[in-house]
Length: 446
Image 1: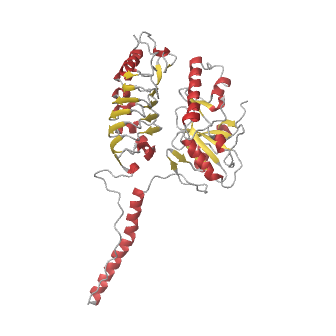
Image 2: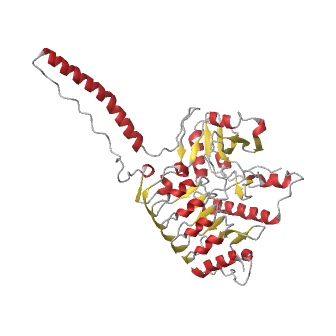
């Protein structure tokens, strides 16, 4: 018997499959690695189940919690109903949980807070109810969270990993409250303006001394109000001001500005991270510029791409527009843009550091003492690259044509998962062009 095969067969038995997507899931075969939409590692353990947009309906089963090595559970865009099984909290190797665009009901299981490797959690467009579990704030690896378009209620946590997320992650949940939603929670001070300042009436007194004392008291009270009212107004403004989005600021030492989960770095911050763009930190050179390894103040490793291009007047706003476009392309097989820096003389993009480099470096530059990539890993890399490009070309809004696909632009994370990089950069480098171009763009991989 195979526990993973039994768990997947239990799932198949509980789902209706009008398009026979699960036809190959034959329970007489001991090894589920031969089934379509199932991916295994070298040890024949199931690491991925891809059943997105398959017209499935029915309910999930608790047996899914037996897939101990599962990293990706993709069940989006179906019509699966019922609760999200709490047993999914047993999938401690899970990296991506995509259950969006279904009909799930009930609460979000607090057991999901045990998924210490989870990076992508998308539960949007369901009918989930109840509060957001506080346990999710403990998932420090979480990079993308989408709980929008549900029926969640209560306060949105603002500590831990949730401090990174913006109103987009929680939109269209009418009973959620807290600063990120702009709605105050019951029992907390409402977001209301301070009362208008009304000057005290003039005081009169028949006696000189008593009149002088009254006037002195009024002056003191007025002075106190003069300082108190602006402080109250400033505190009220700080509490109710809307989420900041990035905008064009020409100075080199700009304040931090965010767009969604995108951060605007200062040039000094990136200079410190890369040791003033030292040659010893160069990870690679390409047609768009050099890439440097950097370490941020919190210890996070990043890759900083320093774009090379002659600056033209009016290009700043267009650059920011294109950066915004790239940041909205979110997929597990796309290199996530973490932030950017723009000054009158510099354009820099900040990405997560990829521990295993690129496909090109793995194939050409590996040490003789290191084994080459095995064929199952190469197949997984090819499939991941195809998924990333397919999302860019067919599903991203707006669609992005890569125009520079090569082995050096397919990066590998710590799990040797393929991540497509440098998409949209050809567009970024064309910001001074205002006409539509049909020329072939890209670089030659030598």
